[in-house]
Image (cartoon, rainbow, N blue to C red; front, top):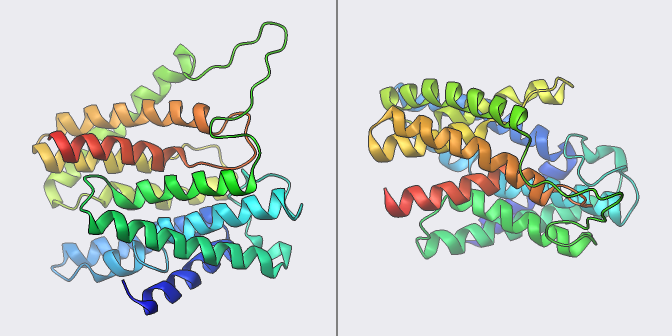
Length: 278
């Protein structure tokens, strides 16, 4: 931990606010593909460690900073229609305060992750930091509490688990993606390979196409494959991550006024189990 990294993290948070949480994350995916290529060619992991997961593009800094800035812009400044909008670059607000919030949450993300790493927490510390940062921004800028405010009407019940048809669809694409990514991770021994591919694919979501986030599925599959040496375990955990991601989305992003990232929630839960017991 150093003052240079703290200042750089402020800049990373401003970057996430200016360009938007999701665009910053997508860019991390594309740069991550370059980093993976360098490692596959026998080069150092500098691009992955210090750029993709560092102060510029680290999800705990840039993405989390963008999420907090969106919550502030929507709920405090009324400059964004919804705080759950992590797609829109916040340049449109032309608001210094929005950028400052992004920068401050960039620093918060860096500090939280540094503490988790220092104490050797058996978890994907970046994912846990994103979750914690999103929770902080919800309580600071939102009013709906951790799991939202649900008011039943006409006997309606809140659902935390998708319907059978939707859940079956998730299970099948999680299994398919899990199998192929687990094979590639086992082949290359690069556990973030699927993560950067999935992050890059989100550019289609940015363009307006209806595609799911899959980086929690592929990263968890990679972790499980490396831990066990088996693509079957990788695929199994991919399915678990896919289902858990849907539950996390319904739990934390329904009837709410800020965004908590379901993939990050899923990754930290699954990684804790894998790192602790496998």
